[in-house]
Image 1: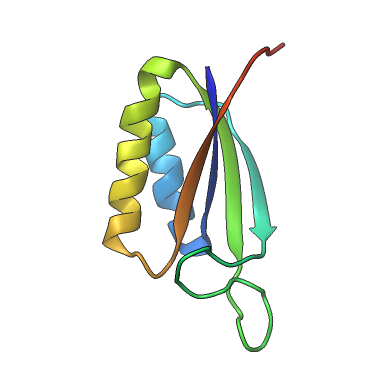
Image 2 (image 1 turned 180 degrees about the vertical axis):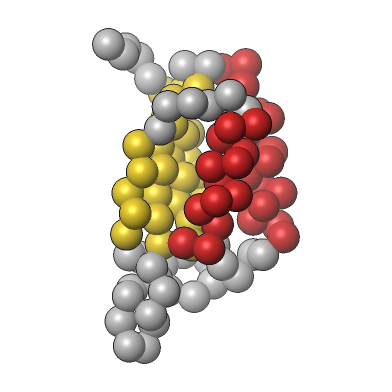
Length: 97
C-alpha cells in the first residue's frame, strides 16, 4: 500500500474528490486550509492580502495496483490548469490498523 499526499489549489477540491471516487479511493483525510508555495512556479497560497488564495491537502492510502491510475488522473488535472498548482507525493505504508 502507498499513501498519496496531494496538495492543491482550493479550486480543485471537487475534481480531486471525483478522481478519488472514480478510482475507488473511499478513505481520505483532508486539510481544508494550508498555505505554501510550489517549488517550481505558480502563485503562492498564503491567504494574505498580497496572495489571497489558500491551498488544501488530502492524504489517501491506496493499493499498489491503483496507484498509477490515480497519479495519471491527478497529473491530467494539473496539466489542465498548471498555474493553480497540484502536487502528489507517494509514501510507503508499512503498517496500518
